[in-house]
Length: 138
Image (cartoon, rainbow, N blue to C red):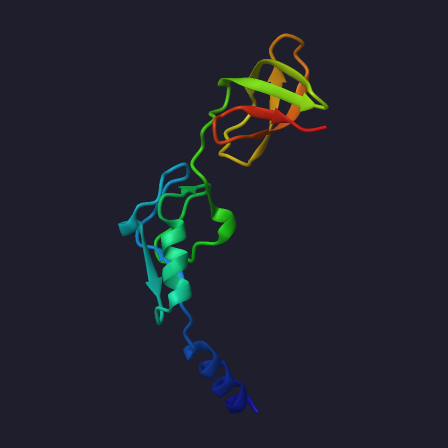
């Protein structure tokens, strides 16, 4: 029985799948270059496409050499830094309200962060646009 279990474990371990891994330790908030990633295992078209999608993205956490890169570990490069003063925009039914806000976090396009309205000191959730503007949702 133990031999059968050992054989099953060895068979399962020998199967390789393509995995995109970091070639070196990449610190958080670093943009990933082409020589920073490689494919471990048998390369397939899907793995090559995944590698192309990772290049130019920003590491959200530290990526260690030889470890797989997961989708949550990377994101679009940040356009807003923490404590940066950014335009805060609210639009609804033709009403447009614009003011300055202070970003309470670091974010890339499409990320939702907390932004403090400088005039009222109220804090709102806003989605960051490609242009670095914080769009308030309601």
